[in-house]
Length: 329
Image (tube, rainbow, N blue to C red; front, side):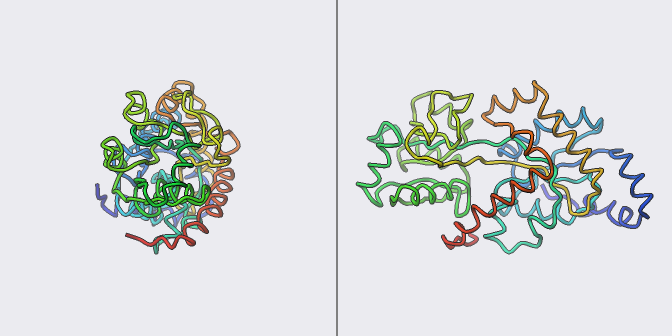
């Protein structure tokens, strides 16, 4: 959905012109109208699901409507860029993620800086991934699968979401950590990749655990390991990659709430408090956990915690992307 530019900018000039005392008073009255959260991906994406559950609690906490708007395209750069240039008044936010606020900056020539042009608000629930293989694969667990890959170099095919996507980077990391070679087949989205694993056209893929579970439960595919430090509450029968012999192979597709640079600290504080209250609500937590999401620890729910987390993720993934020579498609 393409938004009119004035929807993002209409309050910017007025806010910037306010004298310091007026701006303090203005921040103290925040929020006085609806808040828009831009999800830079299509409806149904992981970030979209997180945003809609989050909005339930934030509406109650802030006593204002929270509107979710999907602005997809270019791996999240379009919607993210619009918020980067929106008025810094707290009424237009972006539900960013691992790719929009980490890896995209190492792949695309962006019209904004993923760190300097945003104010961190709070880290949100994340989703571990699960490695699945076709049911006819002659291996029963991760150890056997890695051994098979080593004795059958360049024979296996793994589906990915395209260069630089979470599944692509996980495939590259798996090759690096295990010393194996297999092909990476790019898809535009996870659905077709999953269908080709089910049909036996490709051998494996990484998928978020909520999407994989129905197929695993039906016996249509085999789950070899979860990319988290502990087993997922929704699928305790699936071992972690650690337990399966691949130590330290961790990945969570995380989301976070950001505001445009220059948003007053008082406003950031009120938004953060609303998020923290929402994540502490047992009914909201249950909705997240039922879909395989994990709630971040309290120390990472602060703006400072999110900033430190984002910095660590950039330091981890940028060198790998540059080493792989990943370019925009």
